[in-house]
Length: 252
Image 1 (cartoon, rainbow, N blue to C red):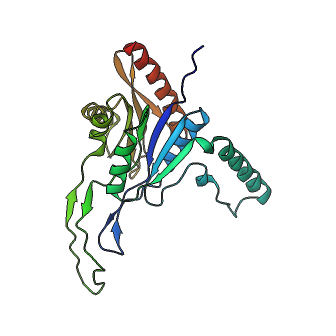
Image 2 (image 1 turned 90 degrees about the vertical axis):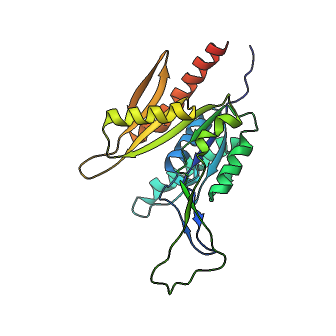
Image 3 (image 1 turned 60 degrees about the vertical axis):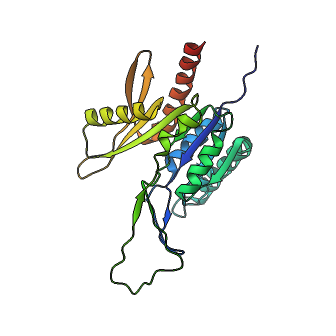
């Protein structure tokens, strides 16, 4: 029986920042929690994971190492022992890359796409704009400060140019839209950027909870599977493996 190499996966996570001057930056509030969970799930399935994380993003396994002083100590210590054991079991297949600034993120991802990568999960909240950085420190005595922003390249649209055969999972976040509109816009986003799968999210708003859908191919059609936040990582990885099997059969 032929031994296949472990799946090699890139997961990006967290947010990028852009420096305004030598001491300040602008960014977003992404924690990287979702990306860290997805990376852990791939590692537990035997994959080799390259984890590209942004500013102050959560990291696989380490995200669970904080001690909660409000919980019983014995229970917390047992939980930490389990996390430590998991890291010892799967951590050897984890490579991590810090990429806080957009330029670092772009360079790191492009470099990784020169390797034998099978899957890329683009869960990072990449900044749409970068500031025109000023040298030194802008005065804090100013009543107003004008910062010039320039649009960043859409990295998701470049990945398939760097590595056409990679299985790409994109993410799309929208605010205050219906399920139908979320599916439509996310499908168009995935089609435009060559994604094989898209995770579609809505932001929570007044009186409405957030909604998460996974748009994936099922034979000749695209399905939208609704999941909870807690279910997302496991279900996504299941569907990626299913999608790779279908893709392999089509190529064969």
